[in-house]
Image 1 (cartoon, rainbow, N blue to C red):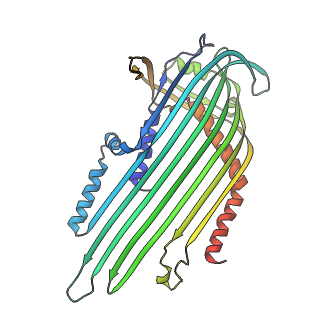
Image 2: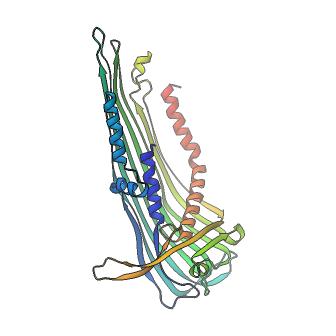
Length: 379
């Protein structure tokens, strides 16, 4: 991965972490249930401009200077990249302040109220990069010497997440635990094409190489339950301080249990290796391997966590309804775009289901790849 491909990921992380949280105080059961929406959006077609604003680097200008230097050196060079797509996170927050009963980590009935975040995440990127270069020289009385190279790289990324996170608090707004329904689908496809011709001394060496890798992983359905070892006043502390360090040890954080149904598929192909130039048959090393696997299971994990909560300035924002509606917000300098504990629980769900899933299918997946390689070498 080149620097230009990785920098947008850092930029996206910075943008997502610059989220906003509605102001509220938490010390007891609310007298009126709240409901609101918020989200973060990013358009990847503006990444060059945003990267320049963040870092001062003008990537198109830098590439232009590189191509100009190549021209001064006597060969042609064209470098380009086109990137489109968007990343969006939307959250619908609701509260249910009617009395409810759940069991705590010890199996005791506890009276609670709840609040729920319905999260929709959609991320997709298409990126194409091209490099074209050529050079030739002819000396009187000798064969021409030249090269002509075209390289095309393509990248496609898709991530979708649908998540419902419900957390339960007692009458003093201490956190008792949370439930989560989760589904995710992630896929990536990378392609590389090299078309080149090298000439010299009366000989030529052509290359027509293609490689493609696609991989997909999904959790089609997962439900999980987290119960803390004891009531935690994390939200009470956060509401009364602009800076709060939260730490939850294994005994205090309790346990997380859940189930999942997952699937993985992959495809890998290589063709165009010039084996005939090495005394082998054409296409001798062409390779194509693909498979698809599914599995279901359960996970049970001890939980521990920490978070440094840091808030910034308070200000008023226009909600953009065209009628001047505003709301008071406070910037959250160290928060993800949503409840940090929700994202912590999501991480545990991904780890628990991923580890269990990997153990179940790892052997089958390895056998599939091994069989493909053995077929490649005729073993």
